[in-house]
Image (cartoon, rainbow, N blue to C red; front, side):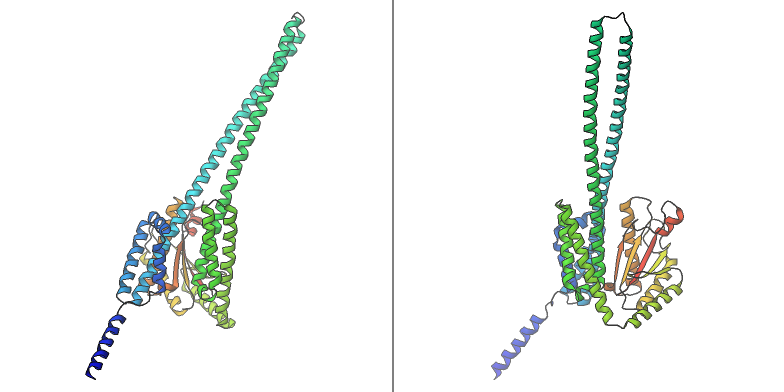
Length: 417
């Protein structure tokens, strides 16, 4: 009996020791693991935004430490921050790549203009030769009128005239044909670049829609279409790398179709959980409170309630001005009251300066607003996403100071489900 009790005690002690290890890795940490494992995207992110990438790696290390310590809440929080920072760095890499391709398109366009100018110069030279031919014809007329000139000289001059005319005609025809060929080739290159730009816009649109669908929990309500959209988007990017433009365009369109279905399914599923009258009344109350808060431009769009703020930062800076944080405090208060609305923060600039600098500034400004709402106002980090779009999507004329001031804005969107 004593030996049996001792065996039971040893078995319980061994079981206790085995249970003290870390548990199953949370989904947020698994997502961060996948990002770190993708060497291609890791190299792109590290090269395009080294500081943001290093910050994502620091958060990843903290998440690993929290996981090993058995602190699941800190693990999820640090892993999510690592994923957000990594996505921000990767998005910047993609925008830098798009800017590089756009720069090459502008160089080819300049080369086409130069070729056209050279063609005009050759045409002008041909006109000069034509004038010379007219002078030769006038000389022929003069020779015919000179009766004292011998018949032999007249025949020689006539033969030279005919030969000169034929040579000029053949040379001019060859030059015109060559110029037409060069112009057609340059136009084909310009058309190809235009198609590439359209494809880049479509890929960016698909990526943005996927991010919005994930914010609306499409992974929960329609995972099949969401996964299909991600697959099609990845295939479209690979087709673009392989120079299969038509396939890339078709795959990008299919990705958008699938993500629109997933978004619609998520919105429809959420709508079933609440009565339509209550949902509309809540949106109306949210609009009234936002409109009455002051200091912001409030409008309703299909995607949600959009709050637009200006003069939030000093020129060229990304830290929210202390005297403007009261607007974010109002937004945080509304977010705490209306907890079912995911938040998306979008940063924009005017068109002055380099596009890449404007894009980076808009991203860091949007991230600064997100950090304030999470760190200072304690909103849940998994409820908010931020993106920067630089000088894209202007709402006013950038050629005027007043228009540029309107384009320098921060938009906070309470997404409708």
